[in-house]
Image 1 (cartoon, rainbow, N blue to C red):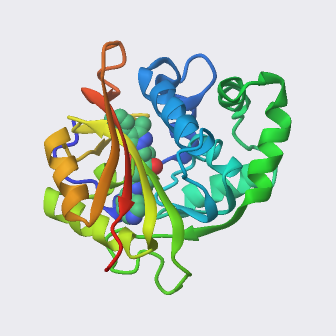
Image 2 (cartoon, rainbow, N blue to C red; image 1 turned 120 degrees about the vertical axis):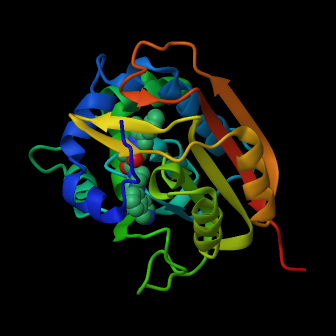
Length: 266
Ligand SMILES: Cc1nn(C[C@](C)(O)C(=O)N2CCN(c3cccc4cnccc34)CC2)cc1-c1ccccc1
């Protein structure tokens, strides 16, 4: 049980990206493969990015990408350029290894095939992987607790911000969460979309034998945080968790998906 907050130094030192990927995303046995979270998020990302909801443009920045690429598979059909970001060196290294098809890269093919099935042709999984590799232009360091999360870089504002399973893991309390949301919002154009997925009612998750803390949030808090953060909520889906088999590994009672539009200044 994570009895204390897992801060960024803890992530940098103790978060084992490879052990995490095997535990949560390995074909058939990965905990999130079996859990409803991944199916729920992939379906919502597919609907958002490839079914004419107007979520498309030049630049999408993914905040807190972790070592995973599942969240980018539909987005790469609707954005010319994707920038992936994360706090820890090992997460960014894991992403670079997959993007460059280097030895030891994690095998995402079963998840890629699932997204291709949603998009209508499961056999196009190899082309999909190459399209994603061509679309991810950079993998940058980010820290959502900084006013400019990409400091010292100053980028043009993005057309879309994507963030999955990040803020609830990175923030120690609700005030920090709201502040981090404002920080990342500075990276988004007015009128641009925020796409956020994650978990409600969690307090921790395990990576190997190590517990990592999670800020427990509920729908009401999240809805208020996004609205107070200067957004109009366009879609808010919650999927209560039914399968409690992996309860001890990554405790949460629901998955959420939010699509919101950043209000223009005028
Ligand atoms: C499964 C699963 N995966 N994940 C996401 C994960 C591994 O936590 C992650 O990669 N993250 C978040 C923390 N993050 C960060 C940590 C410190 C500081 C950061 C500063 N800026 C940006 C990011 C920072 C780095 C990216 C959460 C769960 C989960 C599922 C169900 C129940 C409970 C948890």
